[in-house]
Length: 85
Image 1 (cartoon, rainbow, N blue to C red):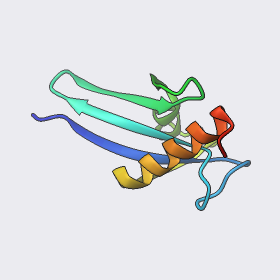
Image 2: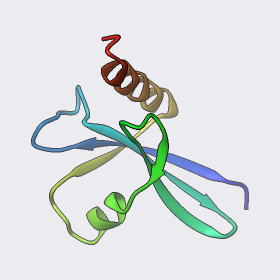
Image 3: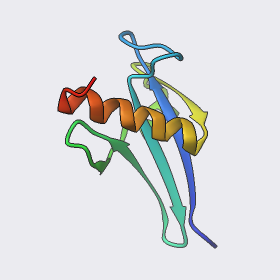
Image 4: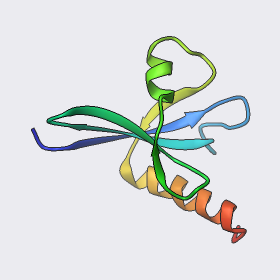
């Protein structure tokens, strides 16, 4: 099975669909799957947030987005962290 990547926007009490609080990606491959969030460390790091959401944790909401939309969120996070905003 080829690797499949699905992107999700994170929405919580401090964000909206127009300005998501973060971005996650689910990577599916022959060995299974894992989730990563783009963090303020400016790296993709493993996260349990999407699994928690699927098990009923209501602290965050997620909705599927395109790779292009994910890249825009990543760029916004980078600008925010580096002060280039």
